[in-house]
Length: 196
Image 1 (cartoon, helix red, strand yellow):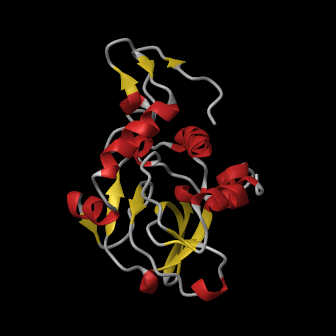
Image 2 (image 1 turned 90 degrees about the vertical axis):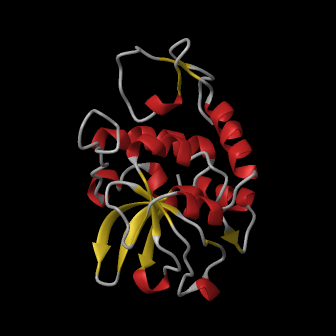
């Protein structure tokens, strides 16, 4: 959970959470307020509707988050897994990529982790041109990494990728669209908390 309920910002300050600023008074609403607002949107939506609503691409977009459908090759050996991950790719390997799946993190941890990752932004605009240029070496010591880092095989991807630009990430981490198999969201979050 985020420590403070509201964040005051300088109106000229630009950061990854700028889309969450209440323009009328220059303050962030509470992180839980945005999570609740995002859930109202997705209550009328689904993962499939989200995929139909955006620009789909054939490969994950590096430096940006991606939503996609996934069927893990080793799912029979896994206690639980996400079939609709929200992933920030950080590396590639032959036949796949390594990424940070934010769905494994409780909502407050998602916010904190994204806050830490914004230091790797390619520019200070935090708009569609901005990429988070993160490598494993950059974040291997960050507690949330162990819970969120996952490997994905291209041949197990079951859809195109919906790119989530940097100016949309703060909203995307609040969307309740994770689709875990094998465990409840509460159990996934408890397991993740034990890793950081």
